[in-house]
Image 1 (cartoon, rainbow, N blue to C red):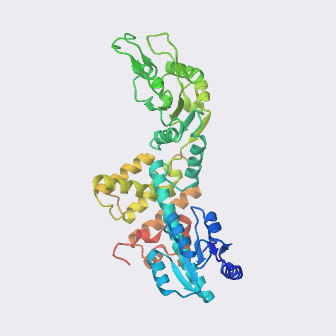
Image 2: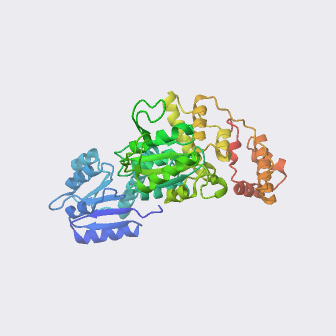
Image 3: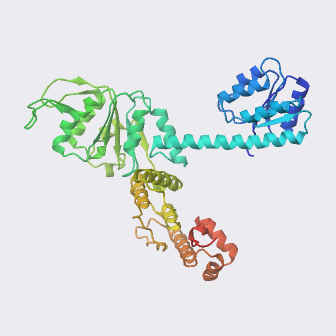
Length: 453
């Protein structure tokens, strides 16, 4: 075991307590020793990841009472009881009640150590399962923030740090990377969660209605304005306003939006009344607004006003290790939705998940998983050829590396993953073959036919 397992040891015989503590420490455990069960219970944390070893016959709280209280706190925490009285009926009853083991004195050192080791392994599995369940729950809550790559760890940490502040945020990310979901999480994790989360896609509305949507209007403000309308900004007061594709906002509206950000007030169309608003603005863009060439006619002063905190959402091609985890989640969700079982994932799908760039990011992967579960997504087992690079983005050594990886994959595919035949086709030594597999990240078993062992 790489981590030292903590042991909570209780025995009112101080000499025996000292000797047992030394025995367990020599066996590689980290031991906290107590001569009083009450003190041991006070030191027992809710996430204790080890094993409790206790004598039975003790003044005050005895071992059986200690076990009962431990079980109330955590029924999966292993408790090993030790007694010098050899009370068989008591041992049987204790084991039936859930005591992990019952050891009689005098006991052989190995007997205790082996029991503790088995209990420690059981506890390790319990804690790992709990951690996995917690991660799954967080993943479901944080979609599309599922992932274990450093980029996603940093993103989750940053969001937690700034969520409960009122600072305006600018989100940068490719199409389908999950900008609206990130904005929603910032709202849900903040003190504004009880207010409205109001989302507006600036690129989806005609220029003629953007101003009315944002600022609202009074009856008669323009042709067709028969009723008073509360604008999105005012509706978001007390909550969060999310402006997606803000780079598409018309220049005239940008000027008005700049005033809203600076003064926190709106003036609906058709009135001179100024209304204060209490809101947090989260804006999103699929282009880099810091780059004047990409920014175009987007106002520089509005960009700097929004750029209090900028968060970049990494595309899937920059966190490939997260793709299988996301695919598994989406496939299970789709299977539940369509009332189907998740099909066995063939090597062609594994290879596609690993090698495809996913330009549509999380949204594209989600749709891919749905089609896979429905049985309408077919990926050929033929290894695709490497398309020639024409834009000069890849150096000659990089292109040669990619071409070599393609040749190896094609040879493996043609030979159903059989190493001997593949090596013969490639004409290279076995050691060189395995070195190249490791360098290119190629998994031989992905190419083995389904009838091979």
